[in-house]
Length: 105
Image (cartoon, rainbow, N blue to C red; front, top):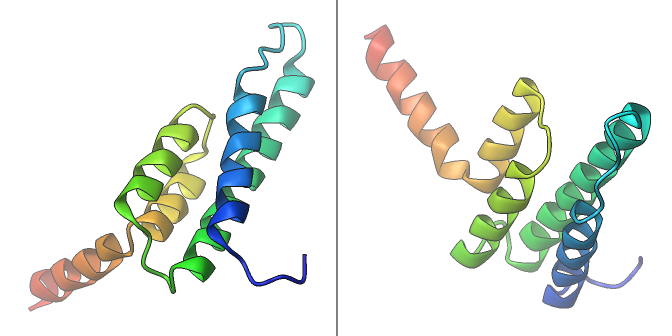
């Protein structure tokens, strides 16, 4: 936990998330499914954070696509989805801000 984040940490988080997504709680296990979904999302957010630290905030395309594909397999709330997209694709925030300036003028 005190080591400088490296690519192997990111890959570790992604492997954990992939393996957890293979689990299929039954429909009657809604609490279990919700807890598993939340834990997978936290694991993916940890991967995203580690990736940002490893690559000085500039996520490689292969990592972006992997994160998006794994997040897509979870149930993401609307507010969280926006935060996740802006974190994975910071260019979207700049685009949004530029469009807001254009509309206000």
